[in-house]
Each structure stands twice: as structure tokens, then as C-alpha cells.
Length: 59
Image 1 (spheres, one colour):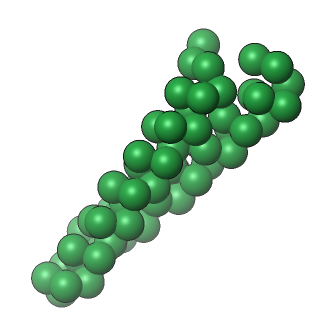
Image 2 (spheres, rainbow, N blue to C red; image 1 turned 90 degrees about the vertical axis):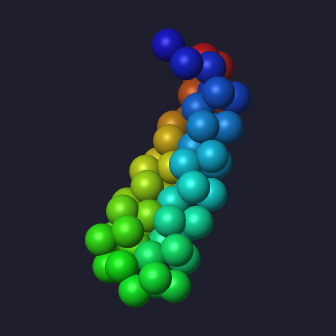
């Protein structure tokens, strides 16, 4: 199982990567890339929250 710090770090990475894709999609007028970025950003936030929960539970 991943540590809480690793989950939080990976979540932050995916959140930033998703934001970059979202902005690139807006700039290039590519709704698919924008949607992909939004999805990845949300997934990153979820993973970051999982890391926070693990920290509270001591895992």
C-alpha cells in the first residue's frame, strides 16, 4: 500500500498536470484535451484526499 505522503504527492502532481492540460485545451480550442485535464485534476484532488485520510488513520 502507498504511504500517505506518496498519495498526497502523486495527487498534487496529477492536479497540476490536469490544470496544464485544461489550460492547453482552452488555448488550443480543444474541448477533449480540456475535459481530459479537468478529469485528471479531479482525480488528483481525490488521491490527495486519500493521502490525508491515511495520515489521519496512521497508515
